[in-house]
Length: 179
Image (tube, rainbow, N blue to C red; front, side, top):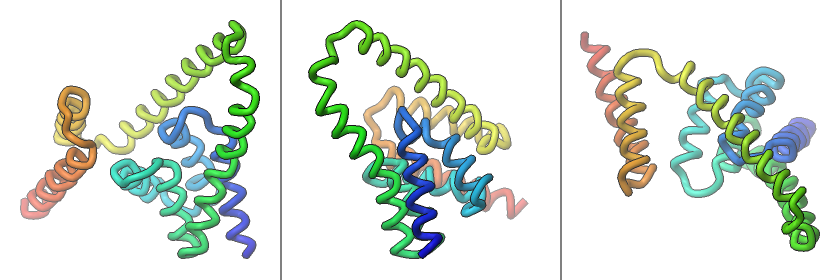
C-alpha cells in the first residue's frame, strides 16, 4: 500500500508542477521515475513514452499508467493515473471558476505569453535529450528526418508513422544481426 501511495504522490507532483503537456513532462518524469525513485530505466521510460504517443489518450496519462502497471499491476496503474490527473482536474476547475473574470486583463494575457515561451523552451530541452538518447547512427537520423517530414507535411496519422518507423527499425536490426 505504501508504494501505491508513493506512485500517486509522485505522479501528482509531476502533474501538478509541469505546465505544457506531455512533452514538457518528460524531463521531470526522467528525474522522478528514473533517477530519484529508480522505478524504470531511461530506456523503459522512453519506450513507454513512445507507446503513449501513439495510443489514444494523453501521453502523460498513458505513461503513468504503464509505469504504475510495471510497479504494482492494475492497482499501480490506477493510482499512478489518478495521481497524474488529479492536479489538472483541480487546477482546471479553479481556473474555469476565476479566469472568465480576468482573461481580458493585459497582465493575465502577458503572463500567458510568458508561459507559452517557457513551455517552448522546456519542450526543446526534451527534444534535445531525446535526440541524444535515441539517435545513435546515420540510419536513425534518416528515420527521424523521414518521420518529421511525414508528420509535418502530410496528413498521415502519427500512429502510422510510428508503426512504419518501428517496422523499419526491426528490419534494420535484423540486418545488423545477419552481418
